[in-house]
Image 1 (cartoon, rainbow, N blue to C red):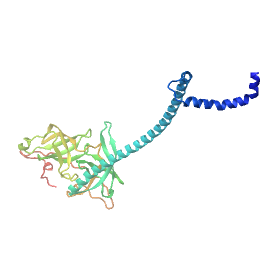
Image 2: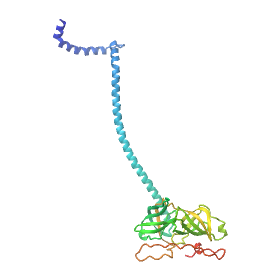
Image 3: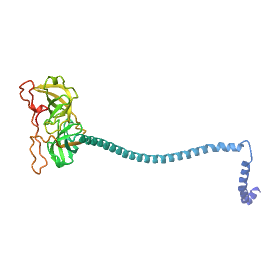
Image 4: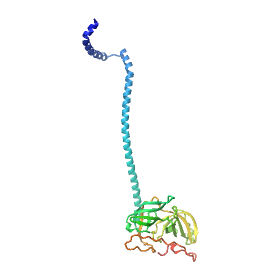
Length: 328
């Protein structure tokens, strides 16, 4: 009988149940109560673990996705920062290089303003020949104002003398350093009135210097390490008052009127970049230098004649070429 009634009115009963269950639930959950019902306790106990696992899975997936997106953005940002850092480092290096070059040019310009007794043209080092012992033996220059430059002219910096123009082709020139074995410069020890000849050794950064002692008063003031050796201008190649080097070894060897010492150059050939070429100075050209042919701008300057000692005839007999009062 019951099953027949359910079969006949099942649709009406189902519709009633659909409307009744929400109403009952609203009434049940909406009324005030102070204790959790047994049904709620069972439901909480059953659904809490699954809800916790679901929440953990959702949170983990969200964090993983967010971390991937963040890492992708961070990697792209890091690449951008690295590129900007390389650009900034390059600009900083160029700025330091330009600042150092500007400082060197300022020193050369100041030197040219101080020394108005000779004319110069600027040049830049574009190459260095290095020996098997890693010593600079020759410089190659890019010369500005090459029409005024010829072989044999002095090459200097604000620190001291460098050498002579040995070869010239267009705007490029090779420099024979003063440390070359073929080089010879007339020089004096600053503040001691001792004159002589400075010759290159052709090895390492050293000179061999021969000086003449004129009397006992000068012998009473021996050379000391660090004593500056300056050009006298008597060789008519290097203007007077330029530093050649300084005494590095006070032990000397005696050769007649001469005392031979070892000097260190005033200029660091491995690091110089800008130079000056002396084209004209008040001392004029060396008297033994032949005149230039018409229309020719370069000519080899013959080496300076060696400073040979003469036979002493008395207490103060010296080589006239090695005295401060030697005639030009």
